[in-house]
Structure formats: structure tokens, C-alpha cells
Amino acid sequence: MSERRPCGVVWLSLLTLLTSWLAIGCSHLSRRAEKEGQPVSALPAPSTPAPRPAKPGTTSLPEKPFSSYRDTTLLFGKYVLAHDDEGYASVFYKPYSDSAWVEIPQVYGRSVELDTANVDRQGEPELLLTIEYKRSGNPDYGIIRTLHILRTGPIVDSLLAMRVGCANYHHSWEDGELNNFEQTQQVTAGYGVLRIGPVRTTCERNHSTAPCECDAQDLREAGGAPFARPGHYYWQHDRLALVRAR
Image 1 (cartoon, rainbow, N blue to C red):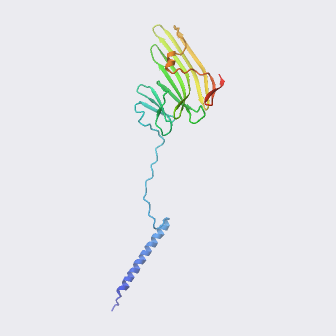
Image 2: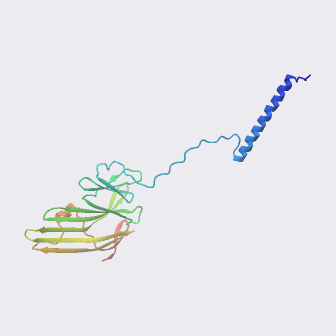
């Protein structure tokens, strides 16, 4: 005849077995956590996608104030050369990196060239702005080229304006009258120095008594800046000083 165990003894055995299972499970979790290098209580952080790398440095121009221009060109990371539908040029710049585009008022005409040089040896390089005024006509036309050296800070400060070229052409096919006149002056700008070459003149005439000189009306229309004295100059006390004449 089998001996029946008391009910309390059976429950005690079951409780002991359940406690053993729990202890084994916790021990297994603890060893797994130690192996992975994190505490048991730590929860894995939700994974986040890696940030997408930015596109290589490209500069895009805002729609305004350039929406009315047929083309725009960003130069030296700071200036925008824009042409309207008739081909006339405008130049814009930013006084600060986060400011709006500002138009430079000295610009006029269709042929505009931009360059930079730190001629005063202070701060940012100055803007070298060469503007060509052209008078078109038949049988004659004229050209005046002017170089502006501008400091483009919060305001546009004109350091120098000089004529670098002029031309006057007249050619009448009916009577063979010909008068070609041209003057040019080469200017080289560097760090704190300005080299100005001599004025070179060419004049060709045939059955013509027209003078070999720049047209006075063209000069007035282009601002009237004169040719500079040839020589080597450097910046001193915010002014150009002649070092050696040529």
C-alpha cells in the first residue's frame, strides 16, 4: 500500500523547483549580459539611420533678385554677374556671408569683367571692375574702357577709377574715308602694389582730317576717368603712392 504525501509537501516541492528554474534563467541572462558588455537592466537603444552625407560644395543662387535676368554667373564666391534680356550687365555682392545680395551702382554697359586683388593689404581682396562703354553706329562707333577698384564692405568704397582704353572708328565706304584711333594702358594689380604701363596709341587715317583722340562725348558718357600716370604704385595711408615713374 503506497504512502500518500501530505499536500503541503507537494506544494513545497513545486515551489522549490520553480525557484531553481528562475535562478538558472537569471544566471544565464547575467552571463550573456556580461559577455556582451552591458548590465542586465540595460535595454538596447532603438537604432537610428545614419545621417545622409551632404552633397559636395555647390552654390545655388536664390530666385530673387535674379529672376528677371537671363543668366547669372557666380564669381570668386562673392560676386554675381547678371545680364538682362538686352545684354546689359549688373553686378551683385554680399557684404556679409548671411546678408542679402546688393547691387553695385557703378556698373553700366554690356561688357563687364571682374577680378580681385588685395591692393590695400587689408581684409578681403578688392574688386577690380573693368567696364566697357560702347557707342554703336554707322559709319562710326566708339569704345571707352574704365577700371574701378572697389572695396565692397557694408558700403561700396571706390578706391580708384582710371581709363584703360579708348577707341574711335570711322569708315565710310562711299568716299573711302577712314579714321581708326585707339589708346590702351595696361594695369597689373597685386598685393599692395599697382603697376601702370604707358599709354600706347595707334592712329590710321585715309582721306580723313578727324583728330586722333578719344571722343569727348564718349568720355562724358563713360564717366570721364583719365589715364593714370605710368609707374609703380603702392598703398600708403589708404592712398596710392608713386614708387617709380616709367
